[in-house]
Picture 1 (cartoon, rainbow, N blue to C red):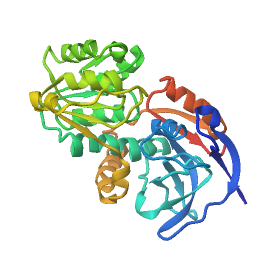
Picture 2 (picture 1 turned 180 degrees about the vertical axis):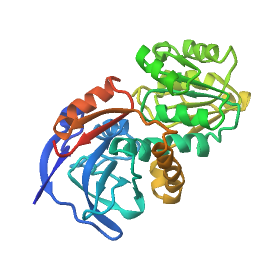
Picture 3 (picture 1 turned 90 degrees about the vertical axis):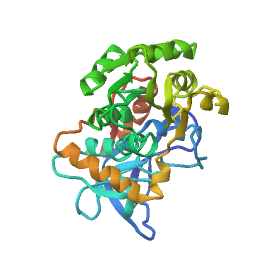
Picture 4 (picture 1 turned 120 degrees about the vertical axis):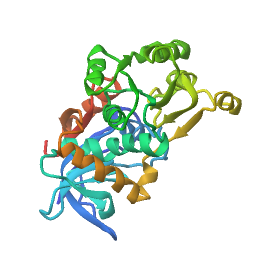
Length: 324
């Protein structure tokens, strides 16, 4: 019996995403077959289909790194995948699935499993956020950013500054807990105005932590905005533009740090995911963490989902309905 899935046979933009029928995937050791109720979409997927991300891709491939579903009518789980998520059925490592509490819907669970775990580790594992520190969250209305703003506030940040590309997104970031917002367009041509805008948003002072996933001038401007012992944690390259190399002298001069984070390394150490997801899902269930759900697209409209994501028309978590 065939399984509806989205497959690419060439690299490129949204136009390479095709809806096809494929054979049902077969579980290997430690794996189970799941019926997918909702598949998650992430910005990294837009890099994956271009073959412009951190790991080389091999064709043909089915994109998608996360799903919510059931195995043989069992409990609803949310899971992480190496790929294959844009499909009616997926094969997942049982160690990378977690039960979804009652009261948490599919899209909320998907927001937590990859983007929420990333936000958790950016602040805890990479930045080692200390109480009272100023945190800048680039793309504060996005999937990771909207959760990072809330977690930074919850974990004692002295001031939270978010960047967001439209008045509506800036208002949302403030509603989620940002004390101030900055338009990232100030970095379009030169990093220096962006540095100045971040410092102005912090009362003229440099900042302690920046979480950034853009690269290019946003990266350079963020680095210049750091206080002594400040940390810039980079976890993406959405600008798809060249990022200046960092010279040791520039770090020594201000005792600054640049830290990279990629959630794939946690997938090889599942206890790191258990720590994050085990704390985040109950927070969603009790209402203390609010995932921003950005839109549920029919799987047949996957190209539209990718176009909207790349054009910055979306806010929060995007999902695909494999039944449509």
